[in-house]
Structures are given as C-alpha cells and as structure tokens.
Length: 419
Image (cartoon, rainbow, N blue to C red; front, side, top):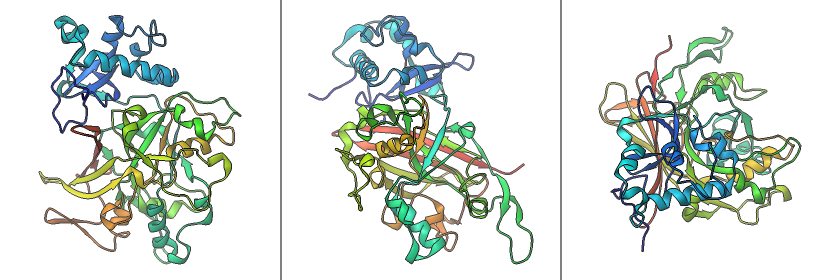
C-alpha cells in the first residue's frame, strides 16, 4: 500500500510524504529562522519536533542541529543522520501514526501554513562552484563562438569543466535581480561599451548541496561521492552574455556571472530522488579510473522555464528539459573537485551548468534559444532575444511517481533596471 500522510496532499503537489525536502523558514517576520520540512501546503517546524524529543534515534537524540538558523550542522552529520531524520519525519506524518496526528497542541505548534512563512537560504554557502556538464549546451555554445569543426574542446570529454563562482551573491527564490553594468565588446576602433548589460540571460541549472566535506589533501572516491551529497536544488545562474563574452578570455567567467545566482528554497534529498534514478549517458572516451563509476546514474527530473514578460499577467513556457541530459554526473563532479586535494565543506554548492537537451525546445538559456540574438522568441504577443527590465523568470522541476510527484517548487526572480 502506498505511503500516505494524515495531511491532505493533492496529486499535483510537489511535496507529498514521499518527498519531504528540507529548508529554512520564518513562521512570523520577527521569528528567528529555523529548519522545516515541506508537506503539502504546510511546513513542519523541525525545531518544535526536536524540542518535543521526537528525534530520539541514535544519531539525532540530543542533537541541536534543528535549533540552528541554517542546515549546515545537520548536513555535517552525514547520511545515517539524514536517513534517520527522514524516517522519523515520514513516520510522524504518516496516516497510521498518532504521535502528531492525535496531538492537537503539537500539531498547531509544528505545522505552519506555507502561505504564511518566509523562506530563506537553506544553507550558509561557504563556496560555490559552477560546472559545465551538459554536452548539448557545450556543443551549441562552441558552434556559436568557434564553429562546428571545433565545437567542443577535447578536454571537455576527459574531465568535468568548472569555474569558482561567487557565493556572496547567491539569493533565495523570489529575490529581485538588478541588471548588472559592465564592459562589452568594442565596435571597430572605438573603446569598449560600458553600461547596463544588453544581453541578460537565465541559465537552467540544478545544484548539489554538499554534506560532509573532506580533509584538505584527501580526495573523495567517486564511488563514495554520493555520501557527500545531501540533495539538489533548482538554480538560475543569471548571465550577462555581453559582459561575459568580452571578459572570459583568458581566465573565464567573472562579472558576467557574479552579480546574482538564484536557488530554490527546498533541498530535495537524494533519498527522495532514488526512485527516479536512471542510467547516465555512455561516456566516450572512457573516463580516467578516478572518474570511472561502478554505477553511473542521473535522475529523471523534468525541468521547465517560464517567462512572464514585463507588464503582462500570463507566463509563457520557453523551454522544457531534463536533469538526465547531464553528461557528467554530480558524483563525478564532486570527485573531480576533490582529486587535487581541495577540501569541500558542509553547505558548499556545486552547480551543474546549463542543462540543455538535444532539441531546440529543450535548450536551457536564451543564448541557445535565440542563437545569440539572431532570432526572437515569441511570448504572448511580444518578443524577446534577451531579458528586459520587469521580466520575471520562473523555473520548476519535478519527478513523476505513481500518483504523486517529488518536486522542487519554484525558483524565480524578476529583473530590475540598473540604478
């Protein structure tokens, strides 16, 4: 019999009892931040559950990890503690268990309507790395800028390419993004353009949230890397394509990326995603031994991007993609990140890079969808080549089970004009 909660959860909800994603919220504007789990249209306050002594297993009994303003202390405890927390919460919320269901006082204190809460960044992000792991995205960008003969550099098929991002400008879904200013390519003999970005773009990504890290100088084995990943979030790594194109040779992305990155507030655990695991693409050539996985898997997560143009009420779907299009897996990304001895820490964020599929309608950014502005997208009677002030971009993602969905909610941001 399918697992069921005593809380009514509709079939289209992203947050059934099979999911139970973790986040940080404030039930009132003056409340201190605290950890919670999403269930249907409610947030379960884990600080209340903890104080009530209901986390009584060997890993969490006596722990104050759910009395913190972020999830980092919980992430550091590792997979046994994560599994124990998930099993405890799943049991408390199940239709067959009365500890919470039959205790009206505890129910009132611990279950907060989602419509009333303020969601915050779920983790304190010490470091953020952005990978470049979609072959379709890499090929499209290469064709655009280098031509089809040299679309993907040979090293791309040997290692997961990445750059170090800016963690200070990562914001939670719903935060406005101010259009960045910077330099763009000069025309002829004139000096470089300087001013508000003319090619502002979204990037459809997801990101892995690191749990236990590794000691400096001690790499993580690729076959154990899954134990160092707590879960995934949706991520929009906003990009100023004109600033990026002028600055990225020879050292890569800088101001074209560091002005803002948006993540969804709920972290969906790898345990919740396990029923949707699927084979990763065949890698050719064979990766070097330190990247060769005994089981190489992705997850079947349907992804969608909508744009609500400035001044309009209705949004328009501009792309549909899937997490399973990634060539390099998140476990390979983590193992590669540490192979030189680099130490990851709880709460670090590893972005996948833009997730594009093979078809034009599955491209993961406007750079690809408009082929760098050579054609326009039609949106509810208006057109776009890149984002305009007032446009709102909304990502969503979910995996579809038998009669339920395991989803991430939304990841949204609206563009404000340069000051």
